[in-house]
Image 1 (tube, rainbow, N blue to C red):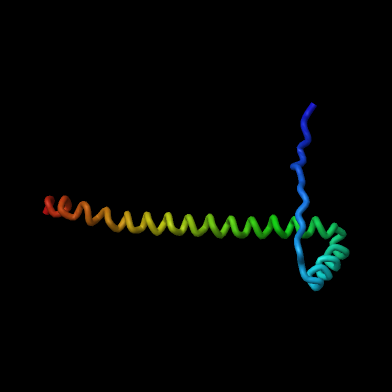
Image 2: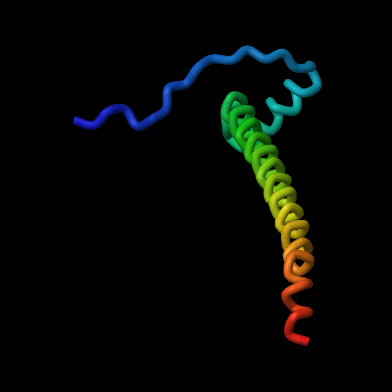
Length: 85
């Protein structure tokens, strides 16, 4: 028998403005989804955006580090190149 494949859910209380609650309710009706589903999807999407931005920044720093290292390599070998002249 397999265990429950659905992740355990927890309750989270968040305070929002009446205006935001009204917008969520309208979107909920238009999309045929529960407000809690819309909120959960929005949180998931925002987290993905933030994680992607963090990853891109890390990659940018790594490439910048490689650039500095690549610029240093010819400097290390300039005397060796001169030996063949």
